[in-house]
Image 1: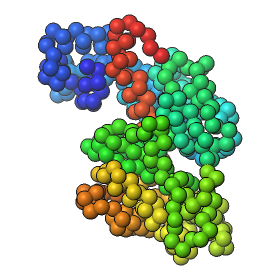
Image 2: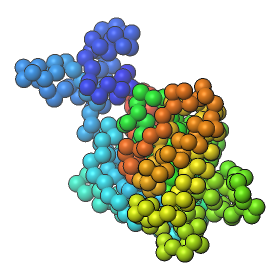
Image 3: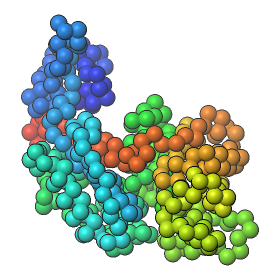
Image 4: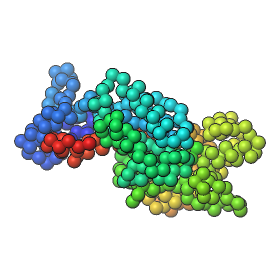
Length: 384
């Protein structure tokens, strides 16, 4: 029943719960009282006499606890504190170097969590979420041979927090968290979404029937490391993963930096590429268009297989929207089946670099408030 309240942010009356759940009034009364007793729901704060909602309407108790999340990338991370309904209360961006290894980076995460928790005891932490820029085994929550994450292979990320917090720890790849955030906050009515991050690297998160699709082991959607036979290239570039000719080796932000340096331009980062594109530099525009067409080729394969309703594009390079999106759309619509693109829209991310923390907050609260955990709580079975 708690899931009903979570899916109705404006609250529910007992009558509405009975209708939606198909339960008797007596059964609803018993379950509502149990949820109230465990402070999972609370009476609406608005009184009917003041023109607000009726007094017998109940909401999820957003003050029952907090969740901590950290969305890590190659060179920076965004950490956030959220309430029990995944509303972000405080957040900050911190520069990091993911190649420093898991201990150093996760110690920084721990320090930032402590700062965010000022005024909240650790006992209030319901769950922790962390995303990483690499493939994550769906069962263990450990990174598996991540191309840019030196020293992270098979590291027990969740275990790093075990001695400090007594709560569930959710670990996922960054683009899955971003995809989930965009779906829940921006496109909740669209059950099938492909999220593509075009930044330093290229990643893809898949939402199928409203849920993250990870595949059997967590490797689903990693288009950045699909080998590609690019036109006119006899000597394919080496990718950061060690293979040659990957999509990312042609079209990732780091590859654009490489190509522009070879053309004699002073570029050191993806942000420099974005600035030069906005300034109208002809070489940069050509490099971006070529890269966007290659990414569009990879996206078209996913479109033909999954037939999503929306492709959402995020990452630093999505800021070059006038150039990048035209080339992506041209490639996707030109290479995909007409039926697969008949109702397809390709749109920019609305959450930008905050998509990951919003997605993580919702992944954590979904875990913490999963039906079996709520049933166990009400029946007196403690679950970690």
